[in-house]
Every structure is written in C-alpha cells, then in structure tokens.
Image (cartoon, rainbow, N blue to C red; front, side):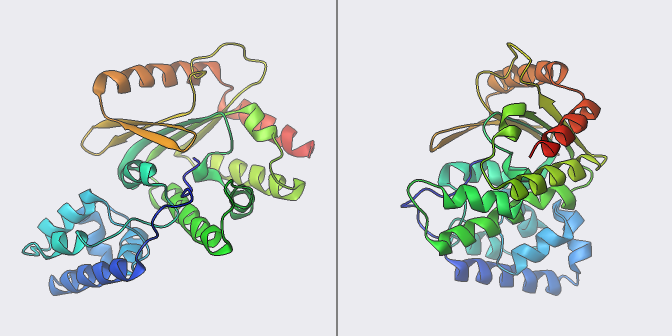
Length: 277
C-alpha cells in the first residue's frame, strides 16, 4: 500500500505516545498482569503490547476500549488517548484501515501497482520513498520506513490470521529499484509464502479480463465477524463498511482467486522473474 504521509501532513507527537504507553503499563502492573497475560485479554500480540507501552505504536480505538474495561481504569486510558496525535509515516486517510489491520482474523489484498506494503523490504520501500513527489526529507524517509516495517510485523505476530495476496505480474516485473533490491524483494515474498497462513497468487500478464480491473482493494474480517474494505488512489483512500459494497468486493476477490495462478504456480513464476533480474 502507498501509505506514506503526503507533504504537509502533521507529524506525530512522540511524547504523547510515550505518556499513553506509561499509563497503560502502570495500570497493567496495578492489575498484576504481565504483558503475556494482558495481550490475549485485549486481542493483541505481546510484541504489539510492548510497542504500545514503549510509545512506538498508535493504539486503535478497540485497544483503548478493551484496555479501559479490562484494567478497570476509571476513564484514565480513554482520557489519555484523547491527547494522542496520529502516527508518523501514515497518511491521514489511511489511518482507519491501519487501525483495523492488527485486529484482522482474515485479510485479503489485491495490488496492481507495486509490491504490497505489507510485503515490502526496507530497501524496496526506501526506493519508493526516495522517489516520492514532492520530495521527502531524510528524517521523513526514516520515519516512514520504521512505520512500514512495524506495520508489516502483523504477518508474523498474528500467525492465526489468514492472509491472501493477489499481485499483478507486471507489478513484480517492474524494476522500481536496483536488481539486487528486486532480487531480495522477491526472495522475501517467496519466504513469506512458506508460512501456512499466507497464500500468494500472481495474476498473470497473459490473463485477459479479470475481476480486479477496477483497481487495488483490500478486505478484512474482525473477530466480531465484521467485514471492511479499503480502496486507494492518488493521494486518497476510502475505508468502506457498507455491507452491500463490501459484499460486491468480496465477490470480485473470490473470482480473482480463481483467475490468478495457483500458489504453487505463482512461486514458480516468482523464481522465473528473479532469475531474469
């Protein structure tokens, strides 16, 4: 996903995140809970709890509500959350989706432009940030890289979440970075495909019409069995909760899974692409 912050977006106030994290940590300890005990009670992984308590991750509304209730915080956690500013490295229009991603039990992604953000290696992502228009400062590039890497951690922190990715072949063949960076990127995708909860399919260039020609899309399901969709364009993004619209996008994604190469065929093609670099 192209979730970088456009020029002019307000930066994160890191001190507010640190203060919020300290409040959560103190209340957790008051309740005599370790991070390992607290994490499943609020539906997050231990690394995620650690990131929030260290002030490195913006908590979602769901986390705030669950932590408030579980820790019997007398409104303290909700009050502290009101003073948080948004996370650096994320566009404002992407925030809603970014809050939902760590809560997903199912996450589907179709991308026809670039390697999906959750898959991007630091070197690949850095190239995208360095070529961004308008230009980014080095500090902003580093901030965006940290956020991109942290966001991608859900792939390993939530092994029970089911992930499906469909990527257009041309998005993988497009050499947006140096050959060694592209080889590393493809190797990374092949390694991720070995995980039992991640399916990767490539939409072959030889495929004519298919159900995803309307553009990139993401779908996710929460533990409450609520489905959401996300659609993105040039400097814009739309979080979709209308069940009728989400249902249509689910139908399109289901059709794309039958039109794309199988996971096994996709790995073979990935190795072919890598060999041509």
